[in-house]
Image (cartoon, rainbow, N blue to C red; front, side, top):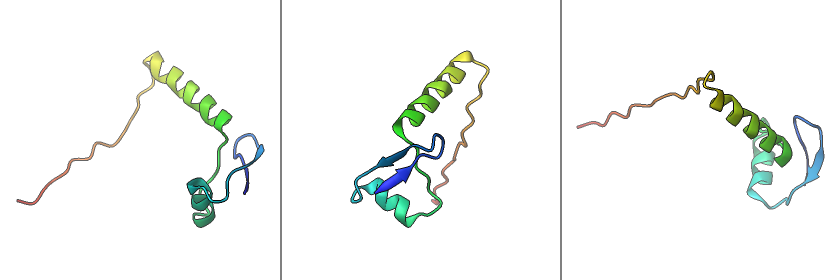
Length: 67
């Protein structure tokens, strides 16, 4: 299966029987990002987190169990 990276428009081929290919086929709003772009974004995010000015906001879910 041929896929195109969203950021750099690089065209790559992935195995058409892989889980990632199945997700791209079945969920049309899913996008593909090549490994180089993924690594670049991960490195830049790690740099921003290490500066101390970046606040990483995640929703804290409180689980309430019925007694």
